[in-house]
Image (cartoon, rainbow, N blue to C red):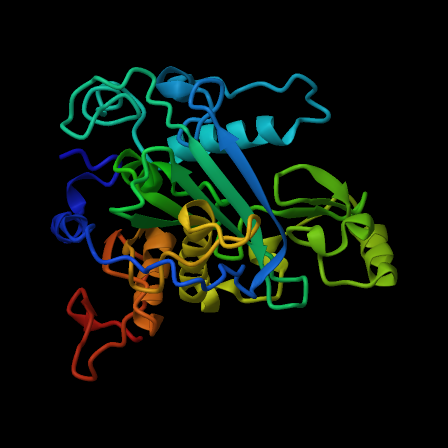
Length: 356
Protein backbone atom coordinates (compact mmCIF):
# COMPACT_ATOMS: atom_id res chain seq x y z
CA UNK A 1 0.00 0.00 0.00
CA UNK A 2 1.27 3.45 -0.87
CA UNK A 3 1.41 5.84 2.06
CA UNK A 4 1.95 8.93 -0.08
CA UNK A 5 4.44 10.83 2.01
CA UNK A 6 3.65 9.56 5.46
CA UNK A 7 6.27 6.83 5.25
CA UNK A 8 6.68 3.82 7.42
CA UNK A 9 6.11 5.89 10.54
CA UNK A 10 2.38 5.66 10.16
CA UNK A 11 0.25 2.64 10.79
CA UNK A 12 -2.61 2.52 8.34
CA UNK A 13 -4.49 -0.28 10.01
CA UNK A 14 -7.07 2.13 11.32
CA UNK A 15 -7.57 3.44 7.82
CA UNK A 16 -8.18 -0.02 6.44
CA UNK A 17 -10.80 -0.61 9.09
CA UNK A 18 -12.39 2.75 8.36
CA UNK A 19 -12.44 2.24 4.61
CA UNK A 20 -14.03 -1.16 5.12
CA UNK A 21 -16.84 0.70 6.84
CA UNK A 22 -17.54 3.00 3.89
CA UNK A 23 -20.85 1.32 3.36
CA UNK A 24 -22.24 2.81 6.56
CA UNK A 25 -25.84 3.87 6.37
CA UNK A 26 -26.69 7.22 4.82
CA UNK A 27 -29.44 9.62 5.75
CA UNK A 28 -32.60 9.66 3.66
CA UNK A 29 -34.25 12.41 1.67
CA UNK A 30 -36.77 13.33 4.36
CA UNK A 31 -37.30 16.85 3.03
CA UNK A 32 -34.99 18.55 5.52
CA UNK A 33 -33.31 21.50 3.80
CA UNK A 34 -29.51 21.57 3.56
CA UNK A 35 -28.41 24.74 5.34
CA UNK A 36 -24.99 26.35 5.29
CA UNK A 37 -23.38 26.09 8.77
CA UNK A 38 -23.72 29.28 10.78
CA UNK A 39 -19.97 29.64 11.20
CA UNK A 40 -19.46 30.11 7.44
CA UNK A 41 -18.86 33.79 6.79
CA UNK A 42 -19.75 35.37 3.46
CA UNK A 43 -20.28 33.42 0.29
CA UNK A 44 -18.96 30.01 -0.73
CA UNK A 45 -16.79 29.91 -3.84
CA UNK A 46 -17.48 26.81 -5.90
CA UNK A 47 -15.15 25.85 -8.74
CA UNK A 48 -15.27 22.78 -10.98
CA UNK A 49 -12.04 21.37 -12.44
CA UNK A 50 -12.06 19.22 -15.56
CA UNK A 51 -9.00 17.14 -14.72
CA UNK A 52 -7.23 18.22 -17.89
CA UNK A 53 -6.46 21.94 -17.90
CA UNK A 54 -6.76 22.07 -14.11
CA UNK A 55 -7.51 19.60 -11.34
CA UNK A 56 -7.81 19.05 -7.60
CA UNK A 57 -4.48 17.37 -6.85
CA UNK A 58 -1.93 19.04 -9.12
CA UNK A 59 -3.61 22.29 -10.25
CA UNK A 60 -3.12 21.19 -13.84
CA UNK A 61 0.62 20.62 -13.40
CA UNK A 62 0.39 16.85 -13.31
CA UNK A 63 3.06 14.55 -11.95
CA UNK A 64 5.69 16.11 -14.22
CA UNK A 65 4.89 19.70 -13.29
CA UNK A 66 4.92 18.99 -9.56
CA UNK A 67 8.38 17.45 -9.94
CA UNK A 68 9.76 20.51 -11.74
CA UNK A 69 12.35 22.36 -9.67
CA UNK A 70 11.19 25.69 -11.10
CA UNK A 71 8.01 27.18 -9.67
CA UNK A 72 5.06 27.84 -11.99
CA UNK A 73 5.30 31.32 -13.50
CA UNK A 74 2.78 34.16 -13.69
CA UNK A 75 1.70 35.84 -16.91
CA UNK A 76 1.83 39.18 -15.09
CA UNK A 77 4.13 38.86 -12.07
CA UNK A 78 2.87 42.13 -10.60
CA UNK A 79 -0.73 40.93 -10.65
CA UNK A 80 -1.03 37.13 -10.57
CA UNK A 81 -4.49 35.66 -10.94
CA UNK A 82 -6.16 33.56 -8.26
CA UNK A 83 -5.75 30.47 -10.49
CA UNK A 84 -2.01 31.13 -10.84
CA UNK A 85 -1.66 31.62 -7.09
CA UNK A 86 -3.57 28.40 -6.41
CA UNK A 87 -1.26 26.55 -8.79
CA UNK A 88 1.82 27.93 -7.02
CA UNK A 89 0.35 27.09 -3.60
CA UNK A 90 -0.31 23.47 -4.61
CA UNK A 91 3.13 23.13 -6.23
CA UNK A 92 4.97 24.49 -3.19
CA UNK A 93 2.89 22.73 -0.53
CA UNK A 94 2.91 19.36 -2.28
CA UNK A 95 6.70 19.45 -2.45
CA UNK A 96 7.24 20.85 1.03
CA UNK A 97 6.59 17.73 3.11
CA UNK A 98 7.75 14.91 0.84
CA UNK A 99 10.89 13.75 -0.96
CA UNK A 100 10.37 14.66 -4.62
CA UNK A 101 13.41 12.78 -5.93
CA UNK A 102 13.19 9.53 -7.89
CA UNK A 103 15.48 7.91 -5.34
CA UNK A 104 13.06 9.08 -2.67
CA UNK A 105 10.28 7.19 -4.44
CA UNK A 106 8.42 10.00 -6.20
CA UNK A 107 6.87 8.72 -9.41
CA UNK A 108 7.99 5.16 -8.62
CA UNK A 109 6.35 4.15 -5.34
CA UNK A 110 4.11 7.12 -4.71
CA UNK A 111 2.89 10.29 -6.42
CA UNK A 112 -0.03 11.34 -8.64
CA UNK A 113 0.84 8.73 -11.29
CA UNK A 114 0.89 5.77 -8.87
CA UNK A 115 -2.35 3.82 -8.46
CA UNK A 116 -3.72 2.20 -5.31
CA UNK A 117 -1.78 -0.99 -6.01
CA UNK A 118 1.51 0.89 -6.24
CA UNK A 119 1.75 0.74 -10.02
CA UNK A 120 2.63 3.56 -12.42
CA UNK A 121 -0.65 3.57 -14.36
CA UNK A 122 -2.26 6.98 -13.79
CA UNK A 123 -0.25 9.08 -16.22
CA UNK A 124 -0.03 12.66 -14.97
CA UNK A 125 -2.45 11.80 -12.16
CA UNK A 126 -4.80 14.73 -12.56
CA UNK A 127 -8.04 14.40 -10.59
CA UNK A 128 -11.24 16.15 -11.75
CA UNK A 129 -13.78 17.41 -9.26
CA UNK A 130 -15.19 20.39 -7.41
CA UNK A 131 -13.79 22.72 -4.76
CA UNK A 132 -15.76 24.63 -2.14
CA UNK A 133 -13.91 27.54 -0.49
CA UNK A 134 -15.11 29.72 2.39
CA UNK A 135 -14.19 31.41 5.65
CA UNK A 136 -15.19 30.25 9.11
CA UNK A 137 -15.63 33.15 11.52
CA UNK A 138 -17.16 33.96 14.88
CA UNK A 139 -18.93 37.07 13.64
CA UNK A 140 -16.06 39.43 14.37
CA UNK A 141 -14.53 39.24 10.90
CA UNK A 142 -11.13 38.71 12.52
CA UNK A 143 -10.77 34.94 12.73
CA UNK A 144 -11.50 34.07 9.10
CA UNK A 145 -10.24 30.50 9.14
CA UNK A 146 -9.96 29.22 5.57
CA UNK A 147 -12.02 26.09 4.87
CA UNK A 148 -11.73 24.11 1.65
CA UNK A 149 -13.51 20.95 0.53
CA UNK A 150 -12.42 18.98 -2.53
CA UNK A 151 -14.95 16.50 -3.93
CA UNK A 152 -13.42 14.26 -6.61
CA UNK A 153 -15.53 13.22 -9.59
CA UNK A 154 -14.97 9.63 -8.43
CA UNK A 155 -16.86 10.25 -5.15
CA UNK A 156 -19.49 7.54 -4.70
CA UNK A 157 -22.52 8.99 -2.88
CA UNK A 158 -23.58 5.47 -1.89
CA UNK A 159 -20.17 4.78 -0.28
CA UNK A 160 -19.29 8.22 1.11
CA UNK A 161 -16.03 9.05 2.84
CA UNK A 162 -14.21 12.16 4.06
CA UNK A 163 -10.54 12.62 4.91
CA UNK A 164 -9.46 15.73 6.81
CA UNK A 165 -6.25 17.47 5.78
CA UNK A 166 -5.56 20.18 8.33
CA UNK A 167 -2.45 22.16 7.43
CA UNK A 168 0.78 21.61 9.30
CA UNK A 169 2.95 24.43 10.58
CA UNK A 170 1.69 27.85 9.56
CA UNK A 171 0.90 26.74 6.04
CA UNK A 172 -2.03 27.88 3.97
CA UNK A 173 -5.07 25.78 3.27
CA UNK A 174 -3.34 23.42 0.79
CA UNK A 175 -0.62 22.61 3.33
CA UNK A 176 -1.50 18.92 3.73
CA UNK A 177 -2.34 18.14 0.10
CA UNK A 178 0.49 15.60 -0.25
CA UNK A 179 0.36 14.36 3.34
CA UNK A 180 -3.36 13.56 3.46
CA UNK A 181 -5.23 15.08 0.53
CA UNK A 182 -3.79 12.81 -2.16
CA UNK A 183 -4.60 9.67 -0.17
CA UNK A 184 -8.24 10.67 0.13
CA UNK A 185 -8.71 11.94 -3.42
CA UNK A 186 -7.34 8.76 -4.97
CA UNK A 187 -9.84 6.73 -2.97
CA UNK A 188 -12.78 8.85 -4.06
CA UNK A 189 -13.12 10.59 -0.69
CA UNK A 190 -13.98 14.22 -0.17
CA UNK A 191 -11.07 16.03 1.48
CA UNK A 192 -11.76 18.65 4.17
CA UNK A 193 -8.91 21.15 4.50
CA UNK A 194 -8.42 24.09 6.85
CA UNK A 195 -5.52 26.42 7.65
CA UNK A 196 -6.11 26.29 11.45
CA UNK A 197 -6.64 30.06 11.58
CA UNK A 198 -2.95 30.65 10.98
CA UNK A 199 -2.33 30.27 7.31
CA UNK A 200 0.05 32.60 5.55
CA UNK A 201 -2.07 35.72 5.31
CA UNK A 202 0.15 38.79 5.53
CA UNK A 203 -0.56 42.48 6.11
CA UNK A 204 2.02 44.74 4.42
CA UNK A 205 1.81 47.61 6.85
CA UNK A 206 3.45 50.36 4.81
CA UNK A 207 1.00 50.12 1.92
CA UNK A 208 -1.88 48.74 4.04
CA UNK A 209 -2.16 45.77 1.68
CA UNK A 210 -3.68 42.45 2.75
CA UNK A 211 -4.31 38.98 1.35
CA UNK A 212 -7.77 37.75 0.33
CA UNK A 213 -8.99 34.15 0.62
CA UNK A 214 -7.80 33.33 -2.91
CA UNK A 215 -4.31 34.76 -2.39
CA UNK A 216 -4.86 37.97 -4.34
CA UNK A 217 -4.08 41.32 -2.73
CA UNK A 218 -6.32 44.22 -1.74
CA UNK A 219 -6.35 47.39 0.30
CA UNK A 220 -7.12 46.56 3.93
CA UNK A 221 -9.81 49.22 4.32
CA UNK A 222 -11.58 48.29 1.09
CA UNK A 223 -11.37 44.56 1.84
CA UNK A 224 -12.91 44.86 5.30
CA UNK A 225 -13.97 41.47 6.65
CA UNK A 226 -12.97 39.76 3.40
CA UNK A 227 -9.33 40.03 4.50
CA UNK A 228 -7.58 36.83 5.49
CA UNK A 229 -5.81 38.89 8.13
CA UNK A 230 -5.62 42.59 9.00
CA UNK A 231 -3.53 43.75 11.94
CA UNK A 232 -5.67 44.92 14.85
CA UNK A 233 -4.47 48.54 14.99
CA UNK A 234 -6.11 51.91 14.46
CA UNK A 235 -5.13 54.10 11.53
CA UNK A 236 -3.26 56.40 13.91
CA UNK A 237 -1.35 53.52 15.49
CA UNK A 238 -0.51 52.16 12.06
CA UNK A 239 0.83 55.51 10.87
CA UNK A 240 2.96 55.89 13.99
CA UNK A 241 4.34 52.37 13.66
CA UNK A 242 5.15 52.85 9.97
CA UNK A 243 7.00 56.05 10.83
CA UNK A 244 9.19 54.27 13.37
CA UNK A 245 9.48 50.89 11.63
CA UNK A 246 9.05 51.18 7.85
CA UNK A 247 8.76 48.22 5.48
CA UNK A 248 7.27 45.75 7.95
CA UNK A 249 4.87 42.84 7.58
CA UNK A 250 2.44 41.40 10.11
CA UNK A 251 1.65 37.68 9.79
CA UNK A 252 -1.55 36.07 10.96
CA UNK A 253 -0.16 33.20 13.02
CA UNK A 254 2.23 35.50 14.87
CA UNK A 255 0.29 38.75 15.11
CA UNK A 256 -3.44 38.03 14.99
CA UNK A 257 -3.76 38.03 18.81
CA UNK A 258 -6.25 35.18 18.31
CA UNK A 259 -4.14 32.36 19.82
CA UNK A 260 -5.42 30.13 16.99
CA UNK A 261 -3.83 27.01 18.49
CA UNK A 262 -6.60 26.82 21.07
CA UNK A 263 -9.11 26.26 18.26
CA UNK A 264 -7.26 23.78 16.03
CA UNK A 265 -9.53 20.88 16.96
CA UNK A 266 -12.64 23.02 16.74
CA UNK A 267 -11.91 24.31 13.24
CA UNK A 268 -11.04 20.80 12.05
CA UNK A 269 -14.52 19.70 13.13
CA UNK A 270 -15.92 22.73 11.33
CA UNK A 271 -14.10 21.61 8.18
CA UNK A 272 -15.84 18.23 8.46
CA UNK A 273 -19.22 19.89 8.95
CA UNK A 274 -18.56 22.12 5.94
CA UNK A 275 -17.74 18.99 3.94
CA UNK A 276 -21.08 17.47 4.96
CA UNK A 277 -22.81 20.61 3.71
CA UNK A 278 -20.92 20.46 0.39
CA UNK A 279 -21.76 16.78 -0.11
CA UNK A 280 -25.42 17.36 0.71
CA UNK A 281 -25.42 20.30 -1.69
CA UNK A 282 -23.95 18.14 -4.44
CA UNK A 283 -25.72 14.84 -3.81
CA UNK A 284 -28.77 15.67 -1.70
CA UNK A 285 -32.25 15.56 -3.23
CA UNK A 286 -33.55 18.69 -4.92
CA UNK A 287 -36.49 19.90 -2.84
CA UNK A 288 -38.03 22.78 -4.75
CA UNK A 289 -36.02 23.38 -7.86
CA UNK A 290 -33.34 25.45 -6.10
CA UNK A 291 -32.67 24.04 -2.62
CA UNK A 292 -31.14 20.70 -1.76
CA UNK A 293 -32.20 18.42 1.05
CA UNK A 294 -30.08 16.60 3.63
CA UNK A 295 -28.88 13.20 2.51
CA UNK A 296 -26.10 12.81 5.09
CA UNK A 297 -26.49 13.47 8.82
CA UNK A 298 -23.64 13.58 11.39
CA UNK A 299 -22.06 10.14 11.58
CA UNK A 300 -23.42 8.89 8.25
CA UNK A 301 -20.11 9.36 6.41
CA UNK A 302 -16.95 7.43 7.25
CA UNK A 303 -14.55 10.22 8.22
CA UNK A 304 -10.83 9.83 8.82
CA UNK A 305 -9.13 12.70 10.68
CA UNK A 306 -5.63 12.82 9.25
CA UNK A 307 -2.56 15.00 8.77
CA UNK A 308 0.97 15.46 10.10
CA UNK A 309 2.74 17.62 12.69
CA UNK A 310 0.52 20.53 13.81
CA UNK A 311 -2.19 19.21 11.51
CA UNK A 312 -1.93 15.83 13.21
CA UNK A 313 -2.28 17.52 16.58
CA UNK A 314 -5.38 19.27 15.26
CA UNK A 315 -6.85 15.92 14.19
CA UNK A 316 -6.30 14.47 17.66
CA UNK A 317 -7.82 17.55 19.28
CA UNK A 318 -10.82 17.28 16.96
CA UNK A 319 -11.37 13.65 17.98
CA UNK A 320 -11.18 14.63 21.65
CA UNK A 321 -13.77 17.38 21.14
CA UNK A 322 -16.08 15.43 18.83
CA UNK A 323 -19.45 15.15 20.60
CA UNK A 324 -21.53 14.64 17.44
CA UNK A 325 -19.69 11.56 16.14
CA UNK A 326 -18.35 13.24 13.02
CA UNK A 327 -15.05 11.32 13.17
CA UNK A 328 -14.75 7.57 12.55
CA UNK A 329 -10.98 7.11 12.82
CA UNK A 330 -7.77 9.08 13.35
CA UNK A 331 -4.57 8.49 11.37
CA UNK A 332 -1.78 10.99 12.01
CA UNK A 333 1.99 11.22 11.66
CA UNK A 334 4.33 12.87 14.18
CA UNK A 335 1.46 14.88 15.71
CA UNK A 336 2.17 17.97 17.76
CA UNK A 337 0.90 17.09 21.24
CA UNK A 338 1.47 18.23 24.80
CA UNK A 339 1.05 15.41 27.28
CA UNK A 340 0.41 15.77 30.99
CA UNK A 341 3.36 14.13 32.71
CA UNK A 342 2.77 11.60 35.47
CA UNK A 343 3.92 13.05 38.82
CA UNK A 344 6.50 10.28 39.31
CA UNK A 345 8.03 10.65 35.82
CA UNK A 346 11.55 12.10 35.79
CA UNK A 347 13.62 13.14 32.78
CA UNK A 348 17.38 12.89 33.35
CA UNK A 349 20.31 14.24 31.38
CA UNK A 350 23.80 13.10 32.33
CA UNK A 351 22.30 11.44 35.37
CA UNK A 352 20.79 14.68 36.64
CA UNK A 353 17.06 15.49 36.73
CA UNK A 354 15.96 18.02 34.11
CA UNK A 355 13.53 20.56 35.58
CA UNK A 356 10.14 20.76 33.87
